[in-house]
Length: 289
Ligand SMILES: [Zn+2]
Ligand SMILES: [Zn+2]
Image (cartoon, rainbow, N blue to C red; front, side):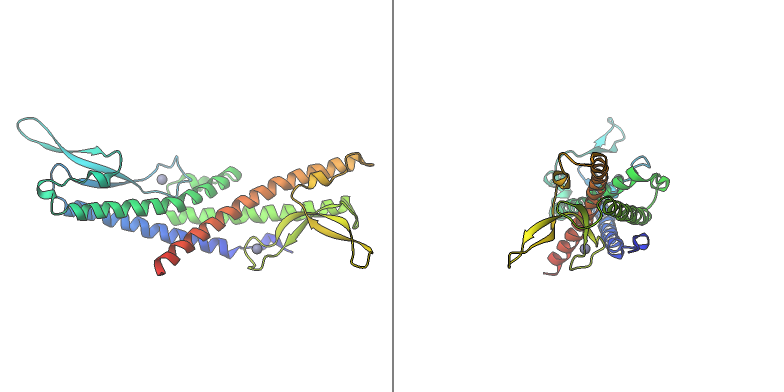
């Protein structure tokens, strides 16, 4: 098995699809921003949308641009008056002006703001997961490019590349630890702790899936005893309490602990990728119903 060359096309594909979706949200935000500017009179009481970007200090953000809602007001003395902007706190939909020239467009303005808010909430579900993934990556790798001002797709490329690198790395280590466990416990005997690898029916990018197993003695139908592998969640429990060779068992225990932390990390990636896939599918199944 050559894990080193695994390209994991499904992971790349779902991240690309989600980025396209984010792009659609962002384009719609720009249109709504413009529409709100055009439909409302240039006087106090207009609700305007502002889009802002994080600085380079927030390199793991996939949510930029973010929405701010502002309300125009009037300032100045007896003479000249100026339009001012005040940030709206709370739900802007509930605060749309209805008086004067705003009366006729009230419903339209409210609908535009409502649409933006709904899309923003949807977008956040995706950007939260992407943000988690990029934090996992920046914890492992020093990725200087992440710190520069990059567009969504450039950040996406860095993210995909490093997730795949890290997963290949993890799988490579798992193979190595698995081999070492077998060398420490040669043969097939009850309570032997080992890593088993299973391919799922979908043949996903996380195949083969590693899990812990031990051998145990079972009685066959005709009364004979045989040895079979069973899946276990806590392999350390199966290790002998008073071993004949404590040094060897210590070694096994430390390998198991190393592997446990790799398995947890691997699961972290796999959980996040499947939640992106689930949300993406749900979104389009809903749209096509
Ligand atoms: Zn941001
Ligand atoms: Zn699989």
